Image 1: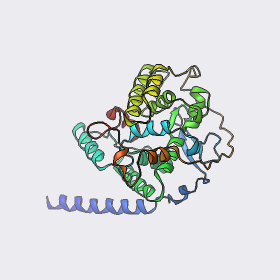
Image 2: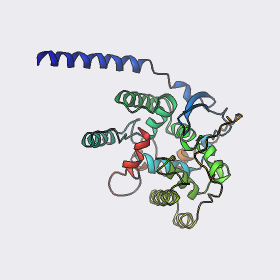
Image 3: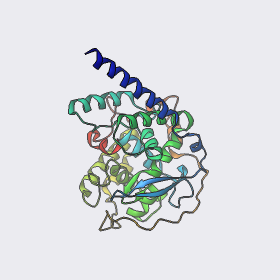
Image 4: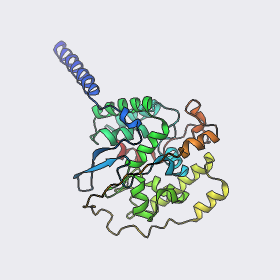
Length: 311
């Protein structure tokens, strides 16, 4: 018995040392402060193969923050991470609930990842489902919150999210599904893209489950109305619209085999979300009002499903 306790103790010490070394060797996040900074990461296609992907203005589909509609940003925040303006990179309450859920189910199904954590994972880490990767993700998210503004984090997140077969970033997603630039997206189209984020490959693949995506986009539009991002007339108009998904390719799981040619894009416009937040009295120093105006703490839509793809 004593020997078992000793071995367990030594194994725990060894693991903690490993974690400490792993965290110390993680890449710096300070380069991300520079909006002109570009780097190459590896993204996976739907057949499991990796391809180079440029993060930054050298990517021809890169959309600077100033060109992203406020409705697009708020749709993602309210649906995916309603406490975005409250936390410092990770949501302690959500993590506790996720741990409790995973222990009950004896699995690693719920991730409780914030937008910042998802950005850290997409930029620096693999999709491996392990405690070690989760700890790295939390640590990187905390460092990013110390160095970057919320607006910059949203910009990075929206430009690297997966929205289809080798369709990464809303710039590519807007062209792929609607044949237009991000700045020209309607509120309904913004909600449509945001609705896909939990699982664009299967659960919220608009080619296979269009009705499910539309239903979730209705829920997101309702949150935008409750928050005041949309007025009543805008909300009703958006509900009445049917997204023009005529550009949906018949074989959505067909891999884009030819890498795109990247050209530089730049913008010096003010961040629409930050501008909207200022006009509504929402600031990082006073983030409580950034949550949707509804009773209780708001949570991501369909939390059980949405966390499956975000571990």
